[in-house]
Image (cartoon, rainbow, N blue to C red; front, side):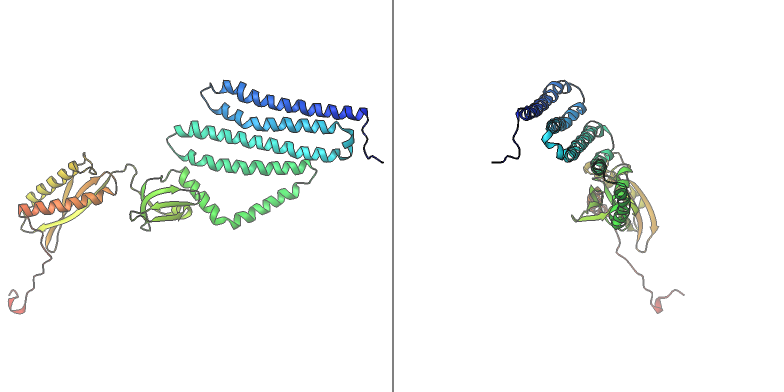
Length: 357
């Protein structure tokens, strides 16, 4: 019987040494995991920041994998029986090591961004950084993985020049194909970073759309109208629109109510009674601004009435509808009580025999 491989005592010694090397690195890997999580982790948990805890957590698995892979690589290269495939072994482990370092770098970047989002972004007055952190995370992932892939090709002896050129041409083609999406993405970045509008604000666009902003995404913005419908608008259109933000510089909003009284009315009495009703409503209604003084201004001699406007102020835009509703009811009842008439439209017709001479 013919044996392809009949190990001698020296062969068994090398295999034993290789097994011992791998076992030693495996033990070292478990020891590193214990040291990082239990020993060093005990100190980092006592610090005021979570950054060191996140870094230790991010590096624990990659360090473990690096030691295991390193031990296996050294153990295999120690075996002369594998000399024929030594080049393949080196290339395989090159890819493995680059992959481990890539994952470690990604985890560290994620840890840094998580720390920033938890300890820094939450203390800032603006919510810009809260929205930018997830975007930076995705961009960092793409850049790191692409660079790692190119490094792998370079270490394997491939000429990465054509790939870099291809990435440039491909990137241009993708940019042209995704121009609407990129436009909305950049517009969303502009809207968020410039803090033009914010989630929850009540806005009106120049096309008549109005409502509360439910969400500002990277491609679209969702607006809930007062009828309850959801308007989804591309950010590129929102960034070009003329926007009225009813919550800037504050939520309270003044509004006017038009009315008119008969020409026979005592305008001093009309002004006094109207302002009394307005003041009382502003003080008693929960949506009225208590420290605002209502204003009455007579505007014109109308066809049937002397017209005037009353300016009041609500705590927000929807409040004006409640205040208008209550004011019209109360003013109408008070005018009836005081004998003040609001005339119907009247036309005086003169016939031929009644014409002035």
